[in-house]
Length: 352
Image (cartoon, rainbow, N blue to C red; front, side, top):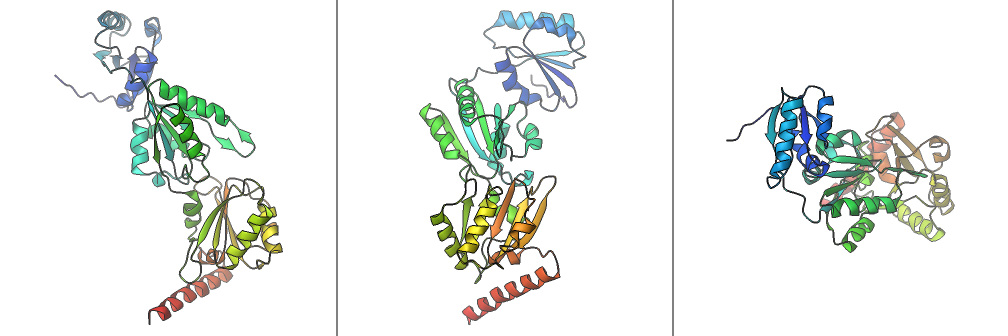
C-alpha cells in the first residue's frame, strides 16, 4: 500500500547514516528536514511530524533499533522506512553554466541536473539564492572566486569534485556564464576524466552576450557590425593582441571584454594609441542582474573619467553597435536613431 504524505512545513527526521539520509532528503524538501545519525539524539529533537528510517532492508536489526528509539523518544511522530539503495561505486560530475546570474537564464537541462545532484560546488557569479530550491537536499559548498581572493584554490575544487564523485555522489559544478567561456571548464573536465569520472557539460547563456543585451546592446547589427569577439582582460593585453584588436574594431567588429576592470585603462590607452578613434562608443555593465546594477555609456576618449569608479564584476563592450543600445539621454537617442536608420536603409538598398 502506498500513502502520499504532505510534509509541507512539517519537521521531518531522517534517521541513519548521513550518506543515506542526504540522498533521501530531496524527497522531503517541502518539509524541515533534520538528519540524525545517532539514536541518542532523538530525545533532544523538537516536535517531529514524520520520522523516516533510512536503512537498507537487509539490515533488519538496525531498522528495528531505530524503530524502538522513535517510539520511545518521538511518540507523536509517524514512522516510516526508506530503503534507498547505496550509492553506486562511482558518481559523476555536471559542469553547469548558470548564465549571467538571473534565475530565468538557467537552462531546463541545468535545472534537471541540479534536482538530482547530491553536492553543489557554486561559483561567485552563479545565482546562489536559488540553488537551495533547485537542488533540494544537496550539500552546497561555496567555492567562489573574486578578483585577488580565492576562497577555495582550484586544486581544492578539483579534489572536492573527485572525492565526492568517487563516494558515489552526483556533483554539480555550477559556474556563472558558460563553463567553456573563460570558466576553466575544460581543465575540470580533464581532471575528472583522468580519474575515470563521467562528466556531462551543460552549456549556459554566456554573460558576454546576455549582459549587454540587458541594456539593448547587440553584438552585431546589419551593415554596422558583422563580427564580434570575446576577450579576457584578466591580464594586460600584449602589444600584438592590441594590434589585432584595434584593427578588428576599425573594421566594424565588436569586442566584449570580460574580467577587464583592473586592466581597462591599459586596454583603452592601447587602442587609442593604435588609431582607434576617441569617439568609438563604449559601455560598461556593472553588477547586471544583481544589487547595485549600473550601466555606463561612454567613448574611448572619455572612458578614463566616466569609468574611473567601476568595480568587478563588469563587462565592457567596445564598438559602433553600442550606440544601438538603450539611450541614456537625448544625444544618445539621436545616435541610436541614426545608426538604425543606416542599417535599415542600406538593408533595403541591398534588396532592390
